[in-house]
Length: 346
Image 1 (cartoon, one colour):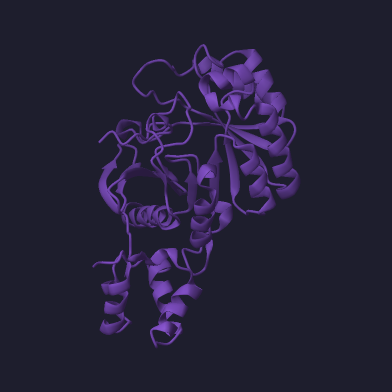
Image 2 (cartoon, one colour):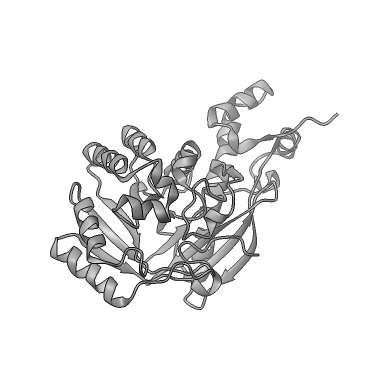
């Protein structure tokens, strides 16, 4: 009768130490294994070369390392890399490496599919199948760091949780993954180089503030007028802008961290002066910056990129009101790796 082996990366360092003590071994063996798992990125127990064969066999008998596999990798003409990542249960998520002259950013997924229903996003058409475990999020980052070193001769500099899924709907696992990514025993990255992007779940934004997280917050806003936002992001009916604003005020009061708004301008949806006025008013309650993101069509033609005239109007009016604004050109469009396009087409 086979007993199901436990996922070893679900254990804390203390639990690993306890396992070895129970097995009549030294506690420090747990530290060694922990370092192999999180600092050295071991994929198999065989990789753990400073551990005896007998100990490796003991680990093999009791545990598994549910490592991701990069099933397919595509490279864009602009250097962007998209990974189709196969999880231990056969499900697939996508993650993206975005290079610029000065940095390399990993865009990682937090769920298989998505819990929310934004009408302009390809991922939202995939039903949410499950949350990713902390190690599955961590592995995406390690894979992209390796690709960054291989193709661009430099380590990964930034991480954004803007891939598939709503990170705040998988809050505990996302925080555990970030803890491993930022820990000196893991990848040792600065939390200031990590941005968690949410569509706006008010009570979870407040929880982040209470938990005194050190990473950055971005909000996918796209409209500061309730009826328009609800028409493109139906969950806004449940979490209206008033609640979102109150949560963001709380976030700023607690953390003193500036808020980034991600904002796509579409033709005939949010491309008028009234829309910009509402956005300016929404931005005023706490220091913020606006990223105007180029829209990437998802085939059905319902949403169209606004005219450059409309984008210019946004930029001019925001700047006139002393609100920092950048226009972000999307990258990786030719391989469906741009914002809103991750949908496991393969």
